[in-house]
Image (cartoon, rainbow, N blue to C red; front, side, top):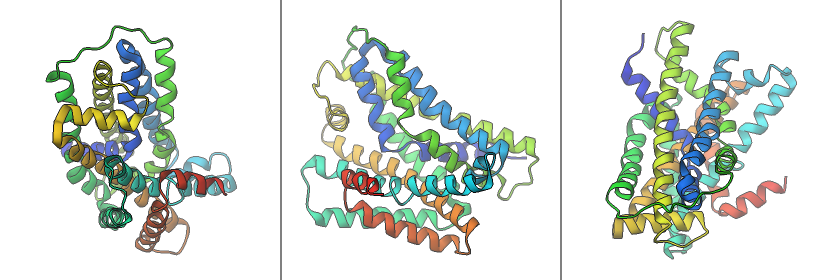
Length: 336
């Protein structure tokens, strides 16, 4: 059997892996632009941004233990090609370096600190932490769920509680047309549905590791930990959307990142930028750690290379690409 504590740790780890910096940026702007229609907007956003990813993990658990088993339903050849392309795309070729670049840019560039020295120091420290948490595959879920997620959740709820209960602001009564459609489409754009299929392998391995569970118990464990992640994500998304809706009365902007930066500064004063920097770094780090572990697990299962060597190689490539910056990383990908 399993303990409630294990369910919570796995659920928090899954939340943290799915909650990247992009997920922090979308909800405030959705609330800001939809005003009093933020509830149907975020309901739809939660369906595609939270519900679909969880269905992705459940689907993989039903057909096998990872992305390769999932795609194998089409054909073995398709499975291998699909899995490799997907893992590379959400791994060292795009998503992992983008997490580092995003964390750096929000922390430094939006505060007028553009020196390349800051960039190299920050990214070396960032990817150093990623390696530290990723090197032991069987400890990834425990470390993320026990150490990083509680810190991230605490700071996120600090911003939400301050914005909802302690800021004397109100939501404009304007009705936004097609609010549900807007939220549905933007929730899908988080790309968490694709990421969840890749993450499924490491989540399922963590559930089975060191436990003598029946198939029914494993599925029950997955459902319960998934509900923990879903509830956490829904609360954070809804909270930030409501805060964003309230900010419409005091801030004027069309830029998602600018809205996030100005919101935290308005609510938390001089500590706002520091707390936001920690939140963004935490969101990016947990996502990067999950992705690096996923890449390591996948390629060590289809090649003779050790998991640890693949992790180190993945992090080195990701570090080098992250130096280019977010926009350059995206342009680099299109060359191929």
